[in-house]
Structure formats: structure tokens, C-alpha cells
Image (cartoon, rainbow, N blue to C red; front, side, top):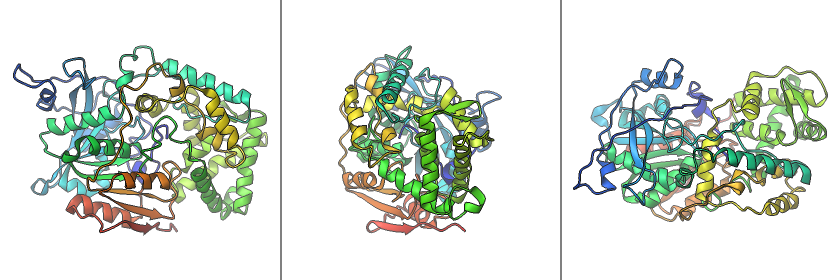
Length: 516
């Protein structure tokens, strides 16, 4: 999914976190002696807790401090096969349980990505007060992300996600860009790249658990975080307490080509938004029926194919339009749909050759797309994808696949099936992909119209984890179900599990609450 944020009430609740890059490298001290096992010494390290704010411009650190959080650094091996070798640092945050007498343990929260910063996630406690009363909430910047020992890819874009465009020429243009992006991750990082795979942050999580003095770990993971959590249960199932996996990725597809089968789900989500916009044609002027709104979108795409659209300081071509549509489909709330409609209206005006006023949200996205000014989670996430599973280096494989699906996936297929930087990656995975298959009891939740981690893939994760129960939010076209505003059915089920340990007797379904 190339590290897009979950644009739901989960993210909206912590707007202070959104779009902020966290930088800096921390250090940690490991207490050891000759009698200590090489690997176990990391479990016994003493943590130095301190304020989270790193400077006057660190708004995330300031918010954490204001919420009573403390931060620390945990030392972990770069290569767990050689625990006497080089160590790196993993940054964590903690907000203690608000009801110490009822405290159960620790709950680590991962926002997804891969490449998402987990450090601010304990701030979500305000949305789940019953859970926050029972658990110390833990945030963790996975290795090479945020304040942890970083991999800094020198890019002038926030994301490698691009459409291959309409022709061989535009496909070759995207391949050139992907080669440049891969090269931009090599300098100063080559010795780190092989150790970015998901198995290693899962191992880091277990070091964090032990360093906190906890016998077991509870976990809430979104999107890519579901894969990270599932890998933890595969490696350390006996130490997994209560795990919630929201918007699960398909474990059989996860890797550099994760989006390859997403076209139909994205089309369905776009259609749902188009119906919403059509009912408000008087306000947005995009068309009075779903078909008319989709025709407006198609005209934008065709116009960008003929010549770049002038939108503010930027020129948007066929490589960019599908991406700009896709990232606005993570959230199906009325507020998100209204913002999306305003952006499409801007693009439609540009397609007609008009001078347009660019909404602030679209300008922020374009700034990141063309300059790399945003949070840049994809820069941190790409090394993880490339270390988890090797991508094909045969460019013709991608082009043939795109061509084979142009008729049935004309808008999004050339984006979801396009190659990425991993096809030019300088290193290969040092471990095979993790094969998931265990009976650890846990909860899988998600929306059946999710365009980012489609429902069939969620069910594949559920099948692989035979001890899991699944809660489906029916009729929702969003990425992220738990803590979404108004959907009390999912929230109640997850809270009951985390607080009381009660899993549903079987798989259950919740209906999306209709917004008025």
C-alpha cells in the first residue's frame, strides 16, 4: 500500500500528528556482563525515560509531553543472527494506564505503512478511555523510521506510487523514476537495507516487551501493522496477549507488489464516492448520476494524458491522476468525501483549461508528491517492502500485466500493477517471507469495501490465523474500522476484547452507521 496513512477518524483524532516528519537518531545503553547470553542481554537493558519533545518545533513531542508520555530508546541488534555485532536504536513512547489498580499490561500500537511512525500513537488513548485505563499505551518507531536509527532515502517525492500511464513510453518513464528512487536509498544505507524486513521489527517488539518488564504483549495494528502483528504471533506466539489486526493485508500477496490486485476494490470505492457526489450535484457540479460523476473523472484522466494539467505551481500528468484519486478513498466519511469532491472539481476545471484555485489539502499533497515535503512514510517503507520479498527485475513482466488489464482496469490498473523501486533494489532479502499459520487467539477487523487492503485479503489473513475471529464492517469503503466515528458496533467489540478478553463466539458483521 506504499505507506499511506489511514485517513479515518483514527487519524483525524490526532491531527497534530498528521504530516509531520520525526527526525533524529537516538542512542541506548545495554547492561551486560560475561555471564549474560548474547541475545538475552538486550532483554535486560535499563531504559532511560525522558521528555519526548526534542526542540521548539517538535509538535508531536510537545503533544506527547502534554499527555503525560515519556520516551526512551531501546537497543536492538542490527542482525539478530549476530547479536554481538552492531546495534541500532528503536525509539518508544509510553503513556501509563490511567487506572493503575486495574492495569493489565502494555498495548503497543502500530499505524501501518510500512514506514509509519508509531511514536505518537499513545495519544489515541483519548478515543479509547476504557482501554487506556487498563494498559500502558506504547508507541514505537520501527527500526529505520522516525526517531529510530534511520534509513534516509534521498528523494524529492514523498511516494514512489505512480501510474505507468497509457503507453510504452510512459511506462519507461516510470521505470526511470523507480531506478532513481532505488539509487536514492543506497548512499549511506547499504549496510542497513538487508535488515529492514518485518521479521526484525517483530523481534524488536519482543525486546521492547522484555525491556518493559512484561511477560506478554498486547497489540493494536492497522494496515501493514496487521502483517507486523501477525509475524510477531508467528515468531513469539506464547508471548502474544490480546492482538487486534485492523484492515489486514493479504499475507500471501504482501510485498513490493502488494497493490497489484487492488484495482477492482479501488474502482468500487470510487463508485461509492461518485454516488455520494451525484446526490450533491448542486453543490459540486460533477454530475447528477454516478455515471456522470465517473465520466467527469475520466475526462480529467484523459486530459492529463494529452497534456499536463496546470494546478497551482505544478503540472499533473497521467502518472499522477490515479494516485491523487486513490489516496482520497481511504476514508468514506461525509467530511472526507466533501474534501475529495472539492479536489476533483479543481482537477476538472484544470482539465478544461481554467485557472483554478487549489484547495489547501490538494496543495499539501502536491507539495509532497513533487518536492518530498511531507511525512515521507513511503521513503521509510520502501526498504521494508524490498527486504521482505524480492520483486521481479524483469520489467517486461510488469508491462505485460498492465497491458493485459487495461480493458478491465483502465484507470487504476496501470498504477496498482506498475513496478516500483524494489525492481532496482541493490540488495536481496536475507530471509524468506514469513509463512503465517498459527492458532493464537486474536481479533481481525475491517471494512468489506476497503480499497487499500481489500476484503479477500483480509479473509486470507483470517484463514491463516486459525485462532482468530473476524468482525466485518459491512457497507463501508474505508481503510480502518476501529475508532471510526459512529461505528459503535466495531468499537464495542474491540473494546470488550481488549478490556475483558472476550472474543466473539464466531465471525460477526456490523453495519456501517449512516451519516446524516
